[in-house]
Length: 319
Image 1 (cartoon, rainbow, N blue to C red):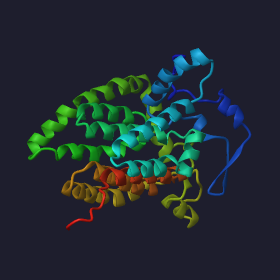
Image 2: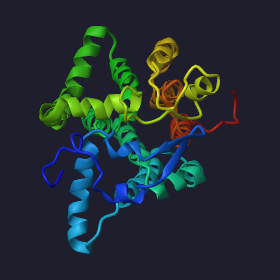
Image 3: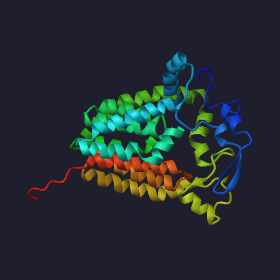
Image 4: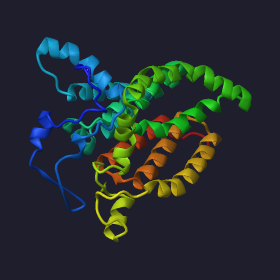
């Protein structure tokens, strides 16, 4: 990007990453796979490399090096701070920080450089701003988050209805949602449109077709979900094959989303918003092309956040 190249249009065959994995044979569900499919596609949304460039430029110029994990470690520390601020009681703060920050599987993912921690940071920041009734600012952070990783897209319906039910009738609710989110929509367009005009075909291939399996260079089927079951019973012959997982997702996820939104309406709270998001995301991922171990860890972290947002200390007085 700093060289003026579109990372959606380019491949990464000249990178150090390509040299490192040049002769490596990977195994997906026990099936051998030569090479690395990630050399041909960039699956993340444009704000992630933009943010990385903004943070890396001063550090690289001052210290002479850059490691992407610097950004992710900063997000990890900021997440701990926000969680500490969100939880009320001192004992609960310590327990929340322990379950969230000392989760060994999550710490391993952070150390390795998986970017789920950045999404959790954005999520905690959104919650913190909503708690402060800074709805416009929270929607701006949400805009940045949805243009960082697809994971945040599934929060949108629950965030929308969280705002929608702030008012007493649907006309006022729609007006309220528009007033609070219009700047975030504008921000999304400013960041996204240049890449769409630059090379829409490559953008579409990297963001959608690469993960859904419809390209010859798509990411192979892998993980612990429904795809693994279909592969082992012979419905899917190879981890390279395309399979329309969207059918299963529609059958299971759409009714679930309707029920979760209806349940959220009964007691519209930040805790239920995050809980609904976690359940919906788990269902969507389970019926997707791959359901990785770090996805399970991410859902666990969402459940921790949801629990401590809605946790009330029991009282032992008159009931």
